[in-house]
Length: 254
Length: 75
Image 1 (cartoon, each protein chain N blue to C red):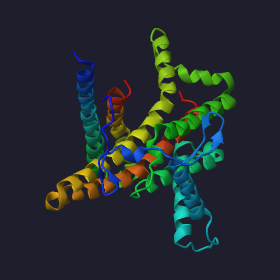
Image 2: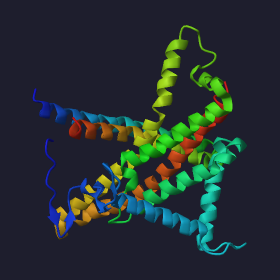
Image 3: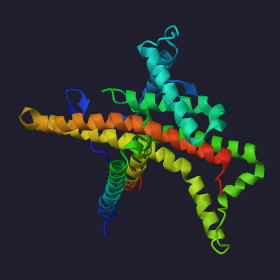
Image 4: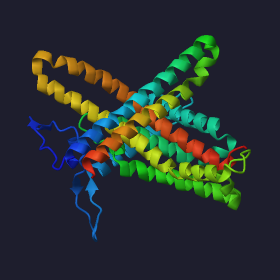
């Protein structure tokens, strides 16, 4: 695969399944040698954040909630329960962070399901930045809470002394692969889903009126699955963030 | 062997990762179902864990996809 296949265009739409992930700059921002342009990714991030703010802040707060307020309250309850179940009461100070994380990833994942929009979370740099914030944040919390004793996280207790060096190495490796697995999970799920949708969309165009309805039906089913995955991955990302936070706050209870 | 051909073979071999993901998802749902049939009252409480297990198992297959893309387009 030395050269990318030139994308075929059918009435203005690209058939190449990877074309949808292309970042194009909309407004050029000169910033030294660094490319700080306002891209379509930035645009959809802004749209997502505005959408979340509208849902969370719009309208007067009533005792009997309206539709928008119900959504906001459900989101709040959902994240609060998740945090309470995994971290317990000690996790309460971190609720704003986890909620922001959940709202951002959820908004990005769901708006990416709109045709013609841009899937921000299908870029590994975005998810890796989020995962790195979680990882560094949890590590800092651990060291602030426990000091140097936090390093005991890498030394499992109740293990024969012969096995200890090997297990410590494994623990260290598994600790440092956390941000990688966290980011790749979200990015790969989103990218695979959108690529699959585009591939089946290409089949619809290719087969035409005669047999095109078969891949169309598959596309509808995959679309439903992808909406589920969009929610599920936001949930999994936040649950894992909570678990890492729990490790940092309580360490392993062993 | 030609490097190009080796790359394509490697990218094809990566699809074996999906087998593991399929087995994993099957185990997750199968065990949930058998547990839920034994004790339906406790099933609802474990639903979030079911989804978590499903997502974690599915991700391993997608790691394979990422490996395939790296083999094809990075080297």
